[in-house]
Length: 275
Image: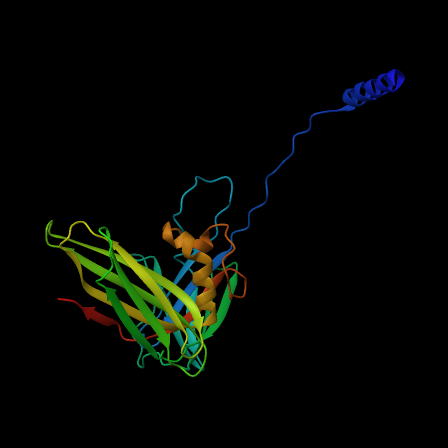
């Protein structure tokens, strides 16, 4: 056993004498890529698009500000009709002139842009208007000294499954302190006929005189690309970060696998008032 230990010690000494320190170059060559973000809504009277460049993960100060591309060539087409987009520096976006005919459900649109080095393109078809029903239940009997309980339900009445985005907010008034405050939710889910999204909104009571005065609910029918992109990137949008400008695994349906073109149709916003 003693001889074995001595043998292992000698081997370790010999191995350590052969070691050397090498510097490893972790630099990864960066290639600037063109990113397009295009959303088209049923009833739109003009188009807009955001064009940015990717940023290197290393080597630049960390910030969430996108690198806008002001000198690209971009257009949207419907069949043989082509609509050019022009850069507006005030909003850092590309806009079209007012359309002769508003966007309608069932129409297909093609988008293309180039920055001189890279061309990106993609297409989308406008979904049908959603057929939704909304119900609101205010639980006034809740035995809680601190919270109100408001149940909001959105049900899909369409014959086919749709990706439904529901946006709702409950606005409260506190007559004691003269304040208005709100609680809200925002969610996308694929719903078959008669399936629902239901959420409870708990709002904090600042006093016994705080009560809900207004509930606003809106819903949209979005295409699959819209739903996948939104559900991928919601955590980043919460922190006001442009998701596809950062090294994230955002869903993409553009030709270069970066960026998004998606469409949607909206249902009228419904307002519930309480006295």
